[in-house]
Length: 110
View 1 (cartoon, helix red, strand yellow):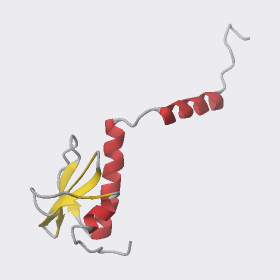
View 2 (cartoon, rainbow, N blue to C red; view 1 turned 60 degrees about the vertical axis):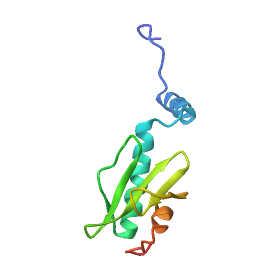
View 3 (tube, rainbow, N blue to C red; view 1 turned 30 degrees about the vertical axis):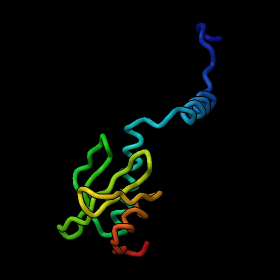
View 4 (spheres, helix red, strand yellow; view 1 turned 45 degrees about the horizontal axis):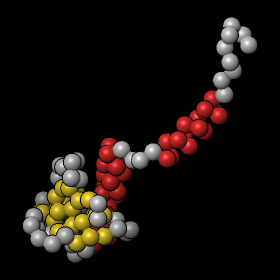
């Protein structure tokens, strides 16, 4: 030991940190980032863009060429969409699938 210090193995430490992080639940911010990425990709497929996201409920409006297409969001049940502000939610396992349930056709090859 030099100067009373123990050798430090960065690789061992990094591996242990990664193992512990993998067991921790997803934070709300990580969830929103993941959902936002998925929504962006789905919007690209359908040639849509979305309004400002309500990050607390993760919901937003979808538009194509300046026209409202519908509402989309994600909750405990999964991704949901509906053509009007009020009505029955259509639920699916992904943003792409739920946007398709709005009757929107893909703008580019998926």
